[in-house]
Length: 523
Ligand SMILES: Cc1cc2nc3c(=O)[nH]c(=O)nc-3n(C[C@H](O)[C@H](O)[C@H](O)COP(=O)(O)OP(=O)(O)OC[C@H]3O[C@@H](n4cnc5c(N)ncnc54)[C@H](O)[C@@H]3O)c2cc1C
Image (tube, rainbow, N blue to C red; front, side, top):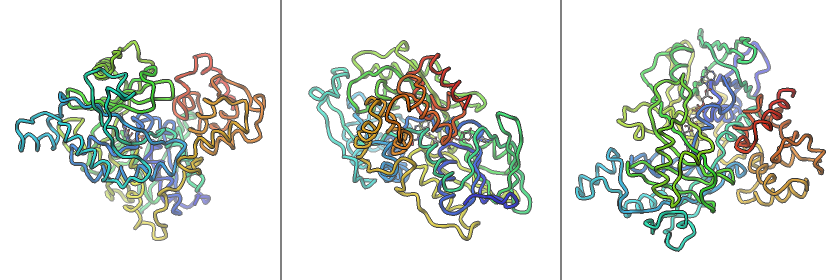
């Protein structure tokens, strides 16, 4: 329900346009609440575009006995696949096994094993991996995703790029998701259900009196300030959650966050199949090497404490070397810093549970209702992309008693914009798009369907020849697509389009990016 009466306060004012803010906005708007959301930069500009982009249970969290989190995330994978078959798809993970593999010594499993079997101290034996994968297969009630199998790497194509010492691997299922598109599609659906979504609007203060918040936003382009009233404040500021608690809203809390940076590197394609690798390191950590954007490989991630959020996270030379060395322990052809085409980094806003290492800090989310001010607020700590929908449900459950007329849960398996087609129907949609707009090559049609789903048919509706699609900016980017992202997806700059609504920034030259920037600016 939109708030058309300026004298009426919104039910909820959400600070932060990452996945948690946008997921809550969608859910709340769909239950009949009036919702406003302010994001200080672009949607998903912070952590929610910097993830490893997996809808996963998190195999390694089993070693930390995080069974609730893993089970919730495993169940959720298939709910999400069904609701967004354009931006998410099943992926197989190949986990090579070698007897040299080591645990991080601080995990509860490692400690337990070295107590009951002291001769196994520090080792991560094959039978334990199989046990973990058995649990992974069965904790979450799979219907769509296939289960674990064993691969003989001496025979299988997945063994070819790897060093000969790796003879066996376990292959299991998880899912890929386009993280920044997930955010914008939640924002679009929230807006379609009446929510007011504002980007480049920084919340500079929130004060409360008589049960109502007065929230002041500052437009980052014009500098203008605006005031909004709301019955409830939702703090979904991710890495800035503490800053909002103390500096913006002046709340009192005991909770804190731990900022843990994770970096990724992107290289040209290192192997010729569509499965990902799960590599275990000598330090007990793990990294992934994932097929990325058709022509590239994504390698990550690292874990490093990030003390100061005012410093933008960057992949340091040490992290680049660490990831190259880690992957080179597995690939026959070593990966070096010269192979790196792009890097990105994000900061995990983890709930501070006083864990000793950044790797061990809990990935659970914690939701804390705060009534220390004159109106209620909900502070959100931690979370994963995979559990965003469940987090939104839990967040609203915590606030429901303030809204007697609120409707029930509704988001499970309900398609996001463009996702209204069967989970295995993408190829049919690609053919349909090509039949309608015959000038689109296979690669472009595939990219468009994977980004916009059935909305790609709307973007190209009635466009049968290239000149009807408007100016061509190279690499299958036409003006009609840029018009769509400006009109429907809050794109204001070339970077919004090239690096968040898409990853076309990997392919475009500086001159092409300039041309796109000029087109977007004149729109
Ligand atoms: C390296 C890495 C890899 C990861 N991989 C995975 C993975 O594979 N799978 C998975 O499930 N999860 C993964 N995660 C976790 C996941 O990315 C995060 O949990 C999630 O993105 C956090 O979302 P958020 O909305 O809380 O935070 P954010 O996305 O950071 O959003 C918070 C937003 O609040 C805005 N904001 C802050 N202050 C203000 C203000 N005053 N006014 C207005 N706006 C404000 C910020 O600009 C920001 O956009 C990964 C995280 C990292 C860092």
